[in-house]
Image 1 (cartoon, rainbow, N blue to C red):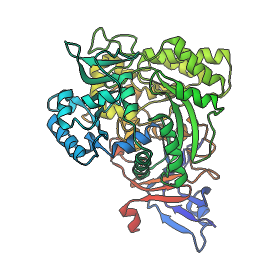
Image 2: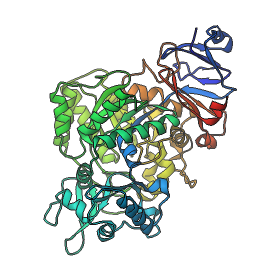
Image 3: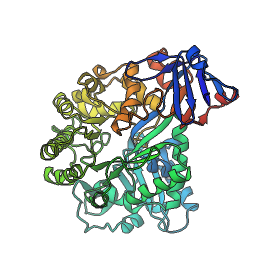
Image 4: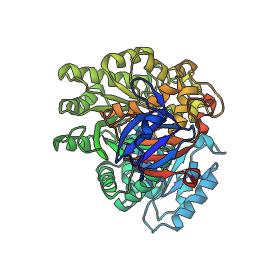
Length: 538
């Protein structure tokens, strides 16, 4: 007899046949039966919990294939500009002063989610304004793209930055006309400051607990963590999972934040490879950054931005450097990947994959491209030939669509081209890149289907996909991207009981209303880890 049975639902199995059935039985941490109400009712015993779905949709638990769980969680410990609706420099400074008043002297005061385009002043705060917040605390304000920051004088000193510091490769310390540092840090300069502003292990653990609670309430049952704070991040995630503070399953990338690949090299030298771990926590690919952000924009483009003639973005590595780092990881058995948003960066990464596979052929490598932003048709064809897995972020279109139209012009038609991915037989795994944008998979699915911004601007209409294909991106394709499609990602007997219920019929609601659906219940490992008030009342 089953422990839990779901009846009378629109059960979207995402199996190879695309079946939509009525009922599911769960025994222990596994799915034990899938089918009609009559078929599954045979598993109901005196102790079975029966949940009447009343026609609502039951889906495999959502898998976010690229987000930053520790960064999102620790952001909640500081000033979150998005969550607070901060829309002016003065409001930001006031919030930072309040944070500083509650922070011991000498400790970091942090803000995240800042977007100068949403400020009334349309600018960053100045170094001097952040000095007015506190001269006894280092103050760190991270832009929403997580590729830029603005800091005060104390923070510059903590990172060892002064007027004599040269710009790092792939980055810039902004200076005024007299050569004085303004406090604005771009790309790899920001990454160095990001590492200097690290948290304590206790703060990491608390942030992870908060993040996990938010994610399961959104129906997320597995995440692919794209890195955050090097070895401290990895250690904290493992401890939090072991302690039960983190409910979501984690596939952890081994990530180099800047040109230094020391962390990746240490992991490789330790004999660790992709796949080590268990169903709760597993080592993922070796990852580096190839270029900048899509929304700043600083991503590396083959032609200049439409909004910035003469500016083609930033590359972190030369071809030889990239081939050395990722080529060695591939040779030693790692799945390899990189942040690559611009078409020039994607082209460089594909050349790296081609060289690595030519030197050391490997079947079923499942190498990835994180984001795969401006994927022109020639790049998509190369991805298909190499069996590469892109992890696009459809929700960026919803939040930042206008910026793509402005900065890319006609090339915006190839921004996260999920339609082209599907047409070319490419398995694309959906991702949010939270906290750069919101973590709701329903918004990601909505954006992949509708290709419209929050304000109604259309971005690459021909790249829209069906609701079912968008669901696949956030379920079975995510499982495939971590070599776990035999364990999860679809509702089939024998697979892990990771399930999510939404409060409507997802295949039947108007496609414009997908984002308005709400998660009613989330199950991980056969355990209900989240239930809405409406679901609890029943």
